[in-house]
Every structure is written in structure tokens, then in C-alpha cells.
Image (cartoon, rainbow, N blue to C red; front, side, top):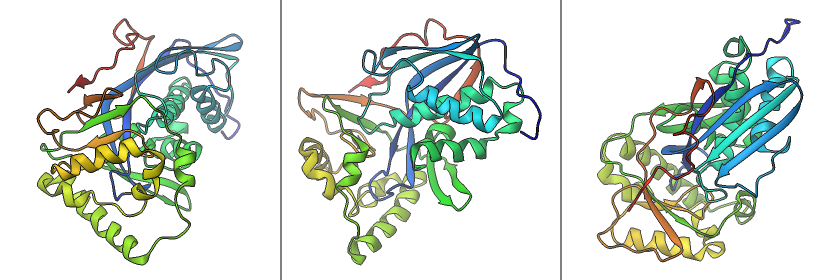
Length: 317
């Protein structure tokens, strides 16, 4: 950074990052919603080496070295901030289900970028919020999940030649998200591979109109959410790889509930209350999750007792 040496903070910092749901039906790679289910991550600079501990979701599966996504994001941010620290200690308490379409990778990336920034004495001046979004989107490959994770609420994200940009809009009171999370996992890369290179012009036109209507429905008129969440660009193409999710979404929509595939799936997202007595099956967890309006929150210090509890905070329906 212009020859100015990088000075690192002496103590630990922590960040709370929300789960997110992207696409929301027709808003493919553009619209996202932050949900009140959180990962807590803390980090501090050490004399040497890298240590990572993981509790909760992904414990025993995620790497505990430099290849951990939080550390990789921190390294990328430290490069932007002007220098790497001598060592790092990272503690992750994960509640966001892994590989389910709820933005676990975006949460890890945003956590890493913000932790690195907070560990540099003038990090906010060297890497402002707009630059943090651009970096997180570059690491993730698209901005639709990192935007709501950073900003909170309902976000519209897009990419310009200079990188990702996003705005956050208030959500109407009648929007009541519920996620239906299956035990099976999904992979974004596989879900993207199922998409065709081109789509019919009529389908593209329909999605453009419904995405515009969805912005209005989510912010002003929730009674329009059912027609606003119609999609022709991605969900039908992915249905064969997640038939259980497709069946749940179809059943909910038939009952008048605005339901969509969350991100690349296989989680389903309903934007209003479920029908009385609705059962997805024994292999599904149903959580009512309010919209997280704050986005990622950084504080000084280590994780406390409450942050170290890996139990999901969502309310079972």
C-alpha cells in the first residue's frame, strides 16, 4: 500500500456472518436475502504458523490449515491490505449447513475478508466496504450471496468492469422466511453444470419481469410473492438432480406458498408461513428464520460462551 508498512492488531477480533439465500426464484445471480442463522469466527495474529479449529457444521470434514476457506479469504485480503502476518489462529463455530444452498462458503469468505481487515490497524482505510464486496465476490465467483452476507437484508447485486456492486433494500413485514433443509448435500459447481448455455427468449423475458416484480413484492407488497417467484432460468433444469427439493417446492406452491430453491439447492425457501401441518419428510429440517437486517458484524475480542454454542439458532417449525 504505497510503501506504508502494514501494522497488525495485537488482540483477537471476531465476526458474526449470516446465512443467505440467493436467486429467490427469478433473480438468478443477482438477488439475495440474509437470514438469521449465523457462523461466528474469531482470529488473531500469532508468532508463526496457522491453526484452525472448527465446531458445529463441518467439524471433522473441513480442513484445519491454510486451505480452510476462511484462511484463504484472509490471505487474499491481507494481500490487498499490504502484507501477510507472521501467523494466524482461527476459531470457527459454524451453524450454517454446509453445501445446502444457504451461503456457507460466502459466509466463510466474508468472515475471512472482514477479519483480515480488522486485524490491520488501518484496515478500514485500506479496504473500504465497496472494496471488501469486490474482493469477496471475486473469491466466490459471483456476488449474489456475499452481498446479503455483508450488507444484510434483501440485496440486489451486479457486476461492472471494476467488480461487484450491491444495494440493500428494506424487507416488508409480511415476508416470513422458512428454510427446509434436507440431509443430502449439493454442490454449486454441479448445479451450474446442469444449466444450458442458452435459454428461450420468452423464458428470459418472463424472468426479467418476475424479478422486477419480486423487488416490489419483497419490499412493498408481499401478497404478490407467489407470481413474483416464478422462474424459468434455472430451477427446472436442476430439478432432476434434486427431485426431493423440486417436489417440496411444487407442493408448497400448489398450496399457495411462494417457495423456491435456495441458491443452488438442495434447501427450499418459503417466503411465507407453511400450511398448517405441512410435512416435508423425516429427512428434512424446517427452520423459521427472520431476515437478518444487519449483515456481518465485527467486534473486538475472542468468542464468548454464547458464540461458542454450535446449536442452530433458528426456530423449528
